[in-house]
Length: 223
Picture 1 (spheres, rainbow, N blue to C red):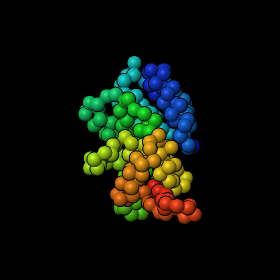
Picture 2: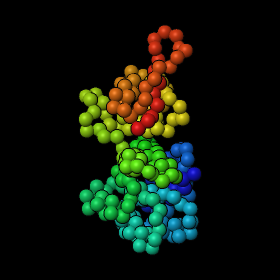
Picture 3: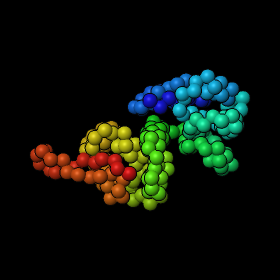
Picture 4: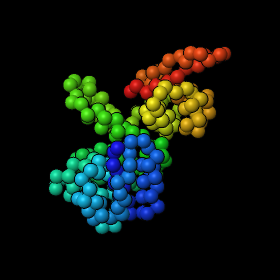
């Protein structure tokens, strides 16, 4: 299990993020802190926290300062910044401090889940030493979301993210109907996204045998 510390000064937001964590297989909430001091204290008292979901605007300090303090004392816990702050200098500081990902508020569960799924995939790849450039590239690419700049007309980034996140977490290949029901879109819409993802190599498409009538296909995340 990946143990997560949620840090946010708004009680309702912190509780919502903690509930999001509980909904994702392989993750558990290690604690909730509402201040910079509380975050540092929690990490000092619990050596098996793996990931911090760190708000940038805390009542007694900035999230960047929390991260800087942790790094200066040798704490190498992974951090995902969760904030409404879009200042480029904050982003640069986050990168320089090794903050793994940056999630801008407000966001829905699908975007949140994608970030944590990407992180879990990254951690699983760290379990064995990468031997080739391709393996190392794949490891770092797992922390990055799909690129939406060249999406065909009619396809949206958030919907693509939601479908990608769901497929990535699925144990088996899924049909368009299963995907449609999971992310609350029509079957036709789900199929359009799945076909695009198959064409771009994000998923593998294969026929599902044994169903009468029109041929059915299933899709499995491979990227």
